[in-house]
Length: 180
Image 1 (cartoon, rainbow, N blue to C red):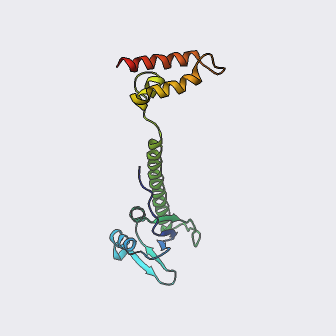
Image 2 (cartoon, rainbow, N blue to C red):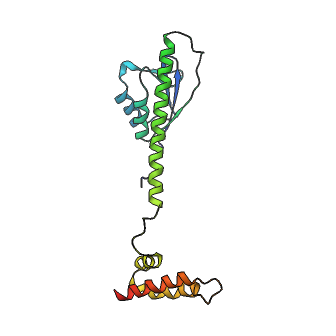
Image 3 (cartoon, helix red, strand yellow):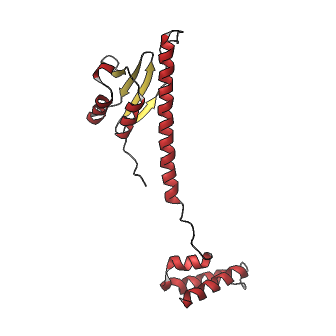
């Protein structure tokens, strides 16, 4: 099972027309190094006033890398102006596509993580034999008599909630274990 990651910082990604605005909740050397490694100097610009990076390139790979380093990436959908019917629309839809692809990638990773969690909680498929044989195999030979005695007190047909079929399975499993 995977260990939960410690969130180093929150990174907020906002589409802003011709670029992506990327803001960090706090400064982190490794996250900044990841940004430098993925986005070339020509494709990024620091906006001192807004304390955010302007990214003039695809954002999916950057977000994946930041998450790999432990950042929590959040997306906002705010747009500072209404889309116009120009070449900006192409960029706008390209950015929307990249944002959706990144979100789908994150969801796919979350599904895989949850499958790992569920796999760790689901018991293995039972082996051959009925429930009583599997129980005796699980507890081991030294405890077979103790387990038999405790269950026979509950399952014996003379008891109000007893069950003849279950008691017979318990008896058969005990005989099978004794023959080994």
